[in-house]
Length: 322
Image 1: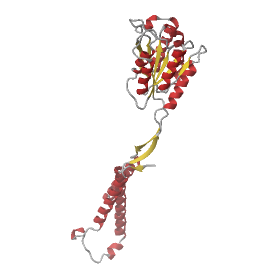
Image 2 (image 1 turned 60 degrees about the vertical axis):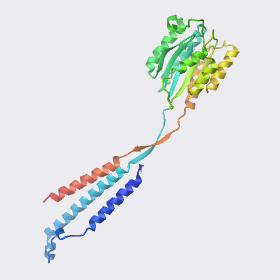
Image 3 (image 1 turned 45 degrees about the horizontal axis):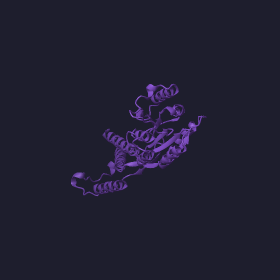
Image 4 (image 1 turned 90 degrees about the vertical axis):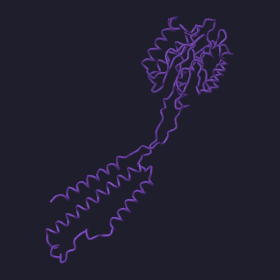
């Protein structure tokens, strides 16, 4: 059912039309309005006169009906009829950066993570994915994109590299000084992969690491988690079974401060459940609130105005016939 956005305008225009109509009906008549003729009873009794009179009345009625239809349609159009609808926001508005620690001890676990993400591509619709790898330094394998064919090809390349230890794939992640598995720096680099800020898109980093750093990095894990929290980015950690307890606790506490969590990938391939759980939690966190909007619906009043014009034109043509 349509409502009027500006109902008072419709009321005002309708009142104006009524006033003008009353002024036209009650206007003072002059001698030029007609010729006074006496003794017209016999003329009015003639069949031809009666037929012409009925025809004139019909023309007047048709023209009046058409004019009223045009006026009604124009008034309704000016008041902007609209229909309220409820819009469901995009439930798949997420940007996810897969952030992989590619130090030598992570090949086996990264292969499982990449394989699971590749298998889950068929269930995605609207999410954007990106891949960044790091050790002493970070490089972006591909930026955020929803081109899933491209993403699948790149994940296939990554899985093959982790399976065959293709060292060319990791060129650019080794620092000049002896540094590796710098988790804090890796998180900070992955946070920079979000190209623009979207208030209506969730942002998450999926981090796979054993959190066993070598050397001194620029940022600590706590500092990187604080930056993620300020940027409203949720960090999910995927650790390895052999992590040192203090390193596992550090990563778990850091991810928790961002609203995420840490899980440990096992030999059984449980990373599949981890990734699905991440998506479900992110979907719940981003559950949108339906909003009401109004959509203009000019079809009905426009149709009334056009119909009125057609009727008025028909009355004019009928009046011109002899």
